[in-house]
Each structure stands twice: as structure tokens, then as C-alpha cells.
Length: 143
Image (cartoon, rainbow, N blue to C red; front, side, top):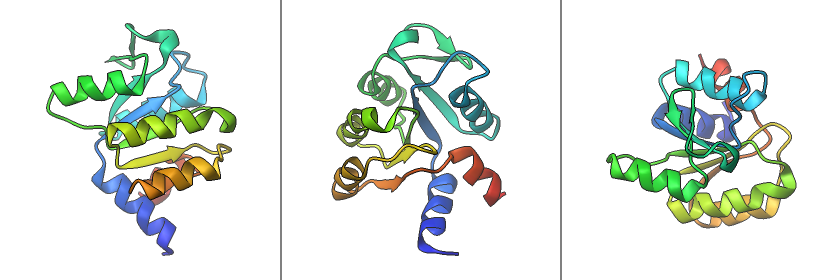
């Protein structure tokens, strides 16, 4: 197993709470499918999408910003371990910066999402970074 696969295995084993930035309420969207899969495998999903803030997605309250989500989880005594980004490559940098600000352990950029500069900022801040990979596919391969 290479270093990247070891890191992915550690992330998926040690993490419990995953904020999904860009999570859609529509069950035909990849973000919804992935979040539902993760939830069914014991992860807590924290929806982040300003379009749906104040509603519930997959039974969880949805937040407008990652900062709002992190504050709510912290009030419950928890923390966001992974920030899973369903954003376009050109828009993901802001979510990565927010992940650094809230003290997340990992930034995960979904399949097709690539931002080398944002990844470098996250790594410099001490976060694990997974880029251009689907968290659901990676989880399925580990099982």
C-alpha cells in the first residue's frame, strides 16, 4: 500500500464527522449519494450549503457556512474531522481556507476537483489533503 493509500485509510478509520460542502437535497446529485453512503456507514454528516441553510438534509441541520457548522458541532462537544468539498475547482479554495480556519483535520476534494495552491495551503497548515478522489469509492475499496 502506498503512502497516499495509507493516509486515506487512516483518515477513513479515524474520522467520524464529515462536513459536506455543497451537499444537495436532490437525491440524484453525487453529493447526496456520497453523503447518504457515508451516513449509512456510521459517519456523521454535516451539510453545508447556503441555498438550504436552516433546512435538514439526510436528517441533519444544514448550515450556510463551514464556520457556522463548526460552531454548532463544537457546542455539542464534537469537531469536524473532514471537509468533503463538492465545489468546482475554481471555487474550492475558499472552502479549503475555511477548513483551515475551523481546524479540520482533512480537506477532501472530490473526483475532478483540483486546486494545487489550496492543497499546498492546507498541507502547510497541517491538514491532510486528498484531491481528485471520491471518498465513497475510496471507502468502498478499503472494505
